[in-house]
Image 1 (cartoon, rainbow, N blue to C red):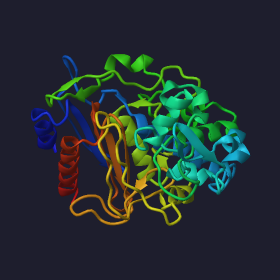
Image 2: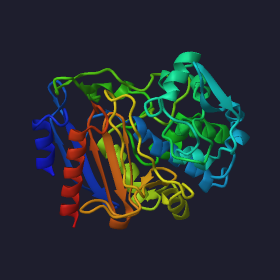
Image 3: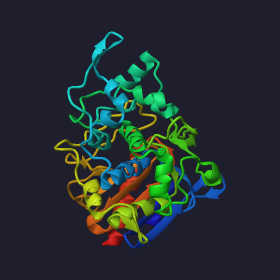
Image 4: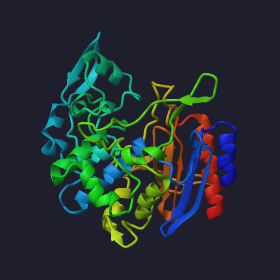
Length: 378
């Protein structure tokens, strides 16, 4: 595993890397290679912009309310957030005029959590950036609350996979049902109880340990790139808001492996964990995410039978030499990655801060690390 990390940095596959692996009882591997910032070696204390790794925690927040009987996966979104009813389906174009219609199905909490709500990011559907540009509406990464209403539906809720800002809406559902702001809820109910002391919505106290972000240039080398969740936004979007470290995120993953508890603190009931990890797509499947922004992200391709649980992408079959059926995974756009394999009592993270997301050199490193983990794990 050390060799995989060192080789990845040496050949320029990643600018630096931190990785960990563990089980329900604890972390049994920790390694790092390269410098997270000039003159500061990457390590367990390195702070990352975890972007979409925030989604698992946002989904957990909603699952806590479901566990307490205050919310249901089948609750219509508009029953809690009336503004959802104003969203229309983008059904084509008349020149530069969007053709919009009312949705034919009712969007639910389950649809938000599984990315089947009809919302899609501008990086994966060319109609969305065109719509945002022509209407002048703010994008999600502006941090403006008005951005929740900016995105049209690109399909009827519940009809297909489409990766988008559904978890940002889900965080607002939690706020509306619970009464606490989502960052306060997460601190009180998840981050504090799990001892995730290096995970925060603002990087202020972590800034001295925050890694540099970089992007691969035309010459194949990495150069500096400014990217971060919007600071002090109108609302914290649970699709991308958090900063964290590898050890902190491992605590979250180990809680899942422990069926909802960690170090004597229970976050979810065992039944709720079972629901959270089950296939919740109701017969649908993950669809290849074809990038329309190659400098920022490559395509995202998964096995044909991949589904989605309430919190993560879910693998329905064994991957040869790697994760098993029932494993869960996702990632952040700056190439912070994780997976959980409940059947084999295994969780791991592989984290850097580079673009493009899911580019081939990164995927080669991820594959080699995962195979090394399972070779060691047995």
